[in-house]
Length: 101
Image (cartoon, rainbow, N blue to C red; front, side):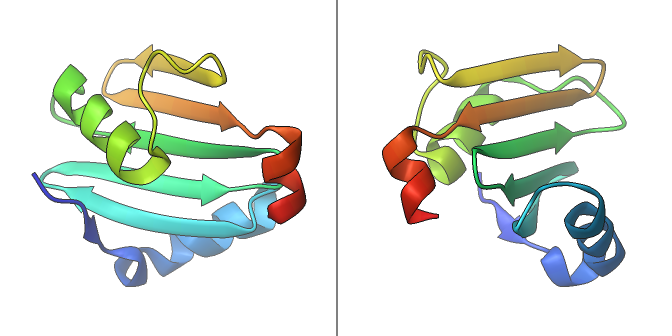
């Protein structure tokens, strides 16, 4: 399973994300038919995993967590929101991480 950077194909999405949120950095990845939107803001990092055809699998969530956030589901700073075909992961930065961003 490989995350492929497809940011250039989603320029409009990236521009809207940067304009309308506190994000300062946005990347878009493909995980097969699943889209992964990664964004960094001063106090948190957000990852949204989207699949319009089926539910997001737990192994996909774990792969994204380890590949992009270098963490796991047990991290107390991680909030996970699951809905039909969408998973939102939000990782709150610690004060030392905030000062380095």
